[in-house]
Amino acid sequence: MTTLLTPKILIIDDEAPIRDVMSASLKDEGYEVSLAHDGESGLKALKEVQPDVCFLDIWMPGKYDGIEVLTQARKEFPRVEFVMISGHGTIETAVKATKLGAWDFIEKPLSMDKILIVISNILSYQQEKEEKTMLLNKLRKSIALIGEAPAIMATKQIIARVAPTNSWVLIQGEAGTGKELAAQNIHYMSSRAGRPFVEVNCGGIPEDLLEGEIFGIERGAMPGVERTKKGKLDLAQGGTLFIAEISEMNKEVQGKLLAYLNDKKYHRVGGAESIEQDVRVIAASSKDLEKEVKEGRFREDLYYRLNVIPFRVPALREHPEDIAVLVSYFSDNVSRESGYPKKVFSEKALEKLTSYQWPGNVRELKNFIERVYILTPGEFVDVHDVRFAGLIDQADEAAVESSDLSTFREARAAFERDYLLRKIAENNGNISRTAEVIGLERSYLHRKIKAYGIE
Image (cartoon, rainbow, N blue to C red; front, side, top):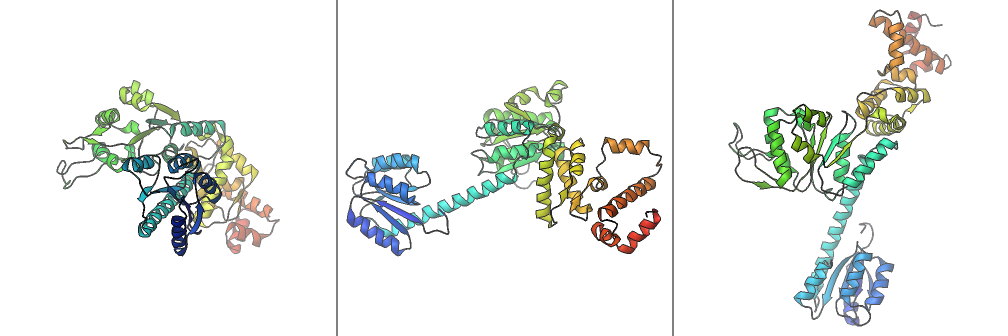
């Protein structure tokens, strides 16, 4: 149902008086009404009209009665809600219709007040469902994994396979590769998408507070806790708990998490009551957990319990062919969110970005593009601009090491002179235009040109 369109109602009933009265009343209420006199014509009308709500009589002569129409229609028209009507229905019939997917069951003689209430409830539900679907689709788009390289496509395929299941997931990969993004994709592509996605980072919480953060704390169990404090598992009920940097979790909390994974029950800190929650756990680690197990820092049983469906998010240097696409994506985001005009990166600048190793992975690239937007005054980004923003690759390091520039001041002066020469050349020697493009006062630029002996 789209709120801008008139809701469509289909009435399938073999009694003409009922069809006429319902039709007239509903049209007076502003609905678009279509009619069918038996099951066979009703199925045709469903296909042609595509109604939002269908009132369907159970007892009708002909090839199909109401139950048969409902059975077939629920498969072919899943977005239509059906309300069954009958003059001599039984509880058995009502239960059967409900099990087949009917919204409600109304007995004859019909009450128009009840019919209008049912329609209002159905339309409200459909609107909320549509809005929720739109929001989820928008969210899924905003957290999409960007890239078409084989390494990223393999990651997307694993996510698509694991998301519909309820299995535990262990995501490994270097810092900044997008493990949290992968976890969000798994959650929002699953049946739990409408439930909470809750995060806890073990590396950012003091060791003695982590247990209470995850499992909650009973009132009076710790100094200052005057009322029961809910943990992340409580908040994630029905949804997903994402545990980042699980390698930093101490052995005691590891044991308690393992107990929860085994029987879906846990105790709050200081509590005696066993709490049962349905929460999917996705864990992530920047460290090699197998190595952590061998060196005795991580429980082997917990590692294998979590490692039901393991996968690794690749480092950016493993799919450099995606860097140009990522630059464009992050550039669009910065331009849209900050109001900057969209910048164009030269081929040489992109080559420079692609050849860089990106030890901080996608997160480092994202932050770098934001820095370029802040530091580059013009709308064209070239090699010297990315250098100015701080990108130093191996060739640049070698050039600096082989130079006789002994101080930072000398190095900066050399960079500034090279930068000004390039910008002046780009603007065909026009000093006023150059000053405008690079964001300097014309008089200040003249002083720099004189200081560096630029002709």
